[in-house]
Amino acid sequence: MPPIITRRDFLKGTTAVVLGAHLARAQEPAVAKKARVVLIRHAGVLDDNSAINPAILQGMLDEAVTRLLDESDPVAAFGRLVKPGETVGIKTNVWSFLPTPKELEAAIKRRLMDAGIAEDKIGFDDHTVRTNPLFVNATSLINVRPLRTHYLSGMSGTIKNYIMFAESQPDYHPDSCADLGALFKLPIVQGKTRLNILCALTPQFHGRGPHHFSRRYVWAYKGLIVGQDPVAVDTIGLRLTMAKRREVLGKAQELPPVPKHIQLADTRHGIGTSDINAIELIKLGWGDDILV
Amino acid sequence: MDDFGQSIPKTIGAWEAREADRVFDRATLYDYMDGGAEVYLAFDFRGVWTRRYAGPDGRELTLDIYDMGSPAEAFGIFSCDREDPEAGIGQASEYGFGLLRFWQGRYFVTLTAAEDDEKSQKAVLDIGKAVVGLLGPPGLKPDMVDYLPSGSLLADRTSFFHSNVNLNNRYFLASENILGLDRSTDCVFAEYDAAAEEAGCLLVVRYPDAAKAEAARRSFLAAYLPEAGAEGLARTENKKWVLALRKEAVLVVVFEAPDADWARTLASSVPAFKSPSR
Image 1 (cartoon, each protein chain N blue to C red):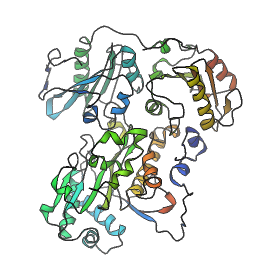
Image 2: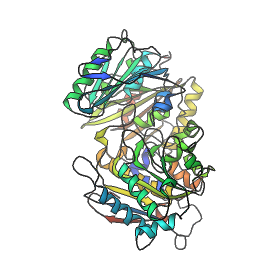
Image 3: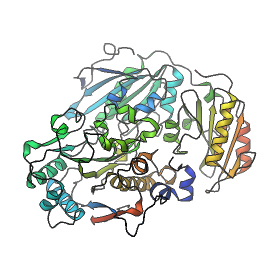
């Protein structure tokens, strides 16, 4: 059973410790390889109306993936992720209030094609990934979606983005969606995810109403959070969300209730790390109000 | 679920329903909501009727009418998420940033505009006023709400619910369900003016029997307030007091109390709430 996080952890200032630094696991930080996550931001990627500058966004993606993999250029970096002849499914998110931006989809597709993937072997999908022949036959997946809070799971990040691969989505709802990490062990998914991109151009840090969306709780952060470990990526996303909630809503509402699935994806399902001490966070670009 | 398709105008001012109306029940609500379904299913939700209106310059708004099974449940779902000023529609309402919420009888209604401009706001309020008259007579709030200690009660901050998901969205307590809340429990969370612009909080939970209430009290003290003595009272890290006591099948917990006596006084004035509200 994971440690119980209570309101008193906020009062003590130990929430982050409980959430992210559960060091009881037998791990030697000095020798263990850290999960690398790149946070990249650019002040010019959005205009005053939140319209995306595609060229700047392409540059952000390129720089992030290049640095993530210590490659010399983005084509070489994407060449590390996929090989010519592969079929690549790009799992997006079509939630009408805050979908995966088309400009980001286009930027990913461009680099996949540069890396030798045929255009007709690249597919985008969300709700029908289970039955989409391209995804059924995919040899590699790229997981990309916006960062937002969620009534039940606390946070919708790259882990939760795979719920559409489940035969029954409600099966993953009990206990605040505790077992979303198990999605990464489904046969259609297991071992195929090459890259996770949490789009933080305009993240949502709180929700209201029937669809848990209000523009008052979206802000222009102008960032991307990129990594190969979905748990590490979501751990950084959660820290960003908590920081923004602390700033706007106050310390008592720092944690969106209750994102336990991120930690359990690590400790129960073993698909990545939520231990902040085992994550190498590389920050690139614009640094104003970075929050994490 | 009533079919409001014929009774609610398809054209209101410059706004027109161009798509087919839709209805979702407990089994299909997940198809409609990504994220919010559990919040409704934790109540006696029966179904939702929804219509989308298209307006000038590509604006859109969505009307959702939820049949919550009873007025108490409709009040409950409305009461759990209040932030905006009263809009004067139905038994209670609020409007802010393109979102209108109100309850009337056993129905809870939301109108959500994609934009937050004057045209959208007017349309949201006009449609809300057109709908409320079709929802039948007013209904009663849950009995527990009416019997709360009224002294310094902040009335618009009182919430009624059953389950842990609603408590944690209203006032995050713990990552686990340490109070054993479920559809069989009736809960009221209220705020009181405690001095210096700070609110003390009161949680009252009515369990099916006294044994369950006592088990919940012990679980709460063990997980949240282990230093509390027999009285169930302790001072927390923010220098506020927390008190948990049981009255027959009712658990009373005071949070954020400025001092111990304030907590004792508030807790002792809560009745045992013997009769069920549903």
